[in-house]
Image (cartoon, rainbow, N blue to C red; front, side, top):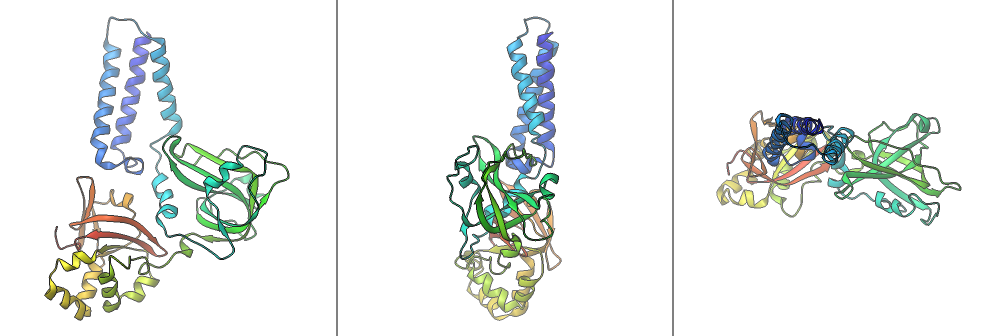
Length: 359
């Protein structure tokens, strides 16, 4: 009886792992390059489960049953198939640093030293904390929300999120799940208050400061504080592309409209065209415009989102095929080198060679 129960648990675990590996959410948590390996592992677990069920000899093991049951409960509780971690993490980790005079940067990790204790060891003062908003009805009534900054911590979970309550002086409260930066004064509580239990998608561990809160002077949308798309193009490695944007007559549009995703070639990509072809690009606004439009698409596409898009329509109306070769994303024949440079009105990816010019 125990043996068949063990087999049933293995069978369920294998089927669940296989469904996750073949689903769209796999790319949010795992490298899609290893999808086949995960499918193979799921198949092996499924076969082992079937073998346990169909065996007619041999004693069962209660300890094995408890181990299998524990794994199944963990998977069911963690719900790794729930997407959302990678898109949530992208803005704060891939965007440029944000500073403002008079405000010290506060990170979620900084809250560890006072979290879970009654000792108010962290000095109060003007700080800025960036992260995503979690709204709760009890906090809404007091004009407060939770602001959590996620970070990777492989020994604890796929991701953890640490943060603090924010006393909002702006109205209305920011939307639940919105990325914001809160500027204000960090104040110590006279009486520590237990942090609420917060579950965020597939993030397994969250904690909210018990001893401090942030009284905001201003809460600003994260993207509103970033530079525009053109400003996010690297100046050292991609100076030719920046010069062609100015020459093409598209600069104003790329700074003000959007969102756009730009696949920006390195200077070395243009050097490979040869001196004569590069001279024509630099002297012809029409050719410069055609190249810039071939390297851009409408919409904001992160690296993770590109894994799920077999093709993209460029601004010039052409099609950019999206493929994965040896674990590397290839867009229109160009390898993605540096991903997810976040801008106010889009995303910049650095590629080589020029999309549409082959390998």
